[in-house]
Every structure is written in C-alpha cells, then in structure tokens.
Length: 226
Image 1 (cartoon, helix red, strand yellow):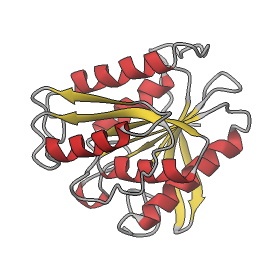
Image 2 (cartoon, rainbow, N blue to C red):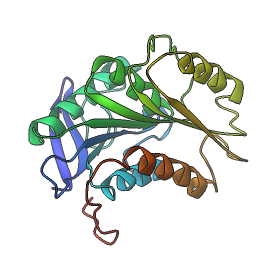
Image 3 (spheres, rainbow, N blue to C red):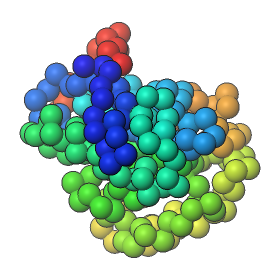
C-alpha cells in the first residue's frame, strides 16, 4: 500500500505508507519542511528518514500537509498542519491497532509540528527533530517535554542559528525522566547541503541505540515499496 489517501480536517491528504511485516511493529510518522518554501513529503531528508524507519521494521507514513501535492486545503500557519499530523497518526494507528509504540520525526517546520504532536499524544515514545526552528516559532509548549529524543542541527545553519537551538536543548535537558541527545553536523547549513550522509549517520546511530532492546526484524535494504 505505498500510495494512500486519508481524511483530514481540510479534506483528503496524500501520503506514502510502508507497512511492516511484523504485526505489532512500531509506527513512525515523518513530517516535511515548510509548505510555502518548497517542503513536500518527497524532500530528500524526509525520504531518507522514511526509509531509515522502514529498514528498522517500522510501519512508516510520510504525507503532504494541506495544500501540498494532492492534499486538499491550504496553508494554515501551523494549526491546520498539526491537525493533519494528528490525522496521520490516527490513520496509522487504525490500521496498526497492535502497534506497541510510536515515533515522530520532522525537519525544520515539520520538527515544530512534530514536537507539538508529541505534547498531545502520550503514546509517542521517541522523536527526531532536525533543525527545529527555535528562533522562528515558539517552543515554550515543551513544558515538560514528555519523551526522550534526538535534536540534530547544522553547525553553519544561518536560518536557525546554533545558539537558538542550543538554548532549546539546554532547557529540555533540565527536565527529569527524559534524555535529550544533541548532534551537531560539522559544516552543515540549514538544508544539510552535501551533508545528508553525516546527518543520516547521526540519526540511524541514535535509532539503533534506542531500538537495541527491541526485537524487530529489519526489512531487507533492497525492498522498497514507497
């Protein structure tokens, strides 16, 4: 079922879905960058994240926010996009009722939406936040942050300066009961131009560490369905 359509509050939403072969496999939802600046579910980083989860046995869904591609509706400055993300998780849970856990991952604008969804859905047990735009959007809702996760950003990010992400990370690290890991990709800009490989190495290493105690058989790397 690689190409899927599900219903959101603004109409139909277009997505790509990779089902796991394992009945109670975890779910992952991957969120794309800003819709008004070329962000789509086929963005290279979103695509790489999607397959990073798929290769580790997840049932994984990526989708276009409202007004992007074949998704209905129009850009809603975050509120509607959060609703879209919640609808995506609802859809994935409906067809995976025995899923034992859920992860959320997002890049830039998608990271902001993902962190908001994290606050609203207690079943989300892990997150990956790439270049969270801490200087552009309010992240004060993370009080407290309910789950452990990874924050990755570029050393030379001119869109979201290092100091702003660092302030966010330091705030989250003071909270008890969760572990926030931070990775800085040397020489990388906001879009990780020519730095996708070290970005994904940081992400996959983190995933493998978190999943080390979970026995999910990875998908063969040559099998792609999305």
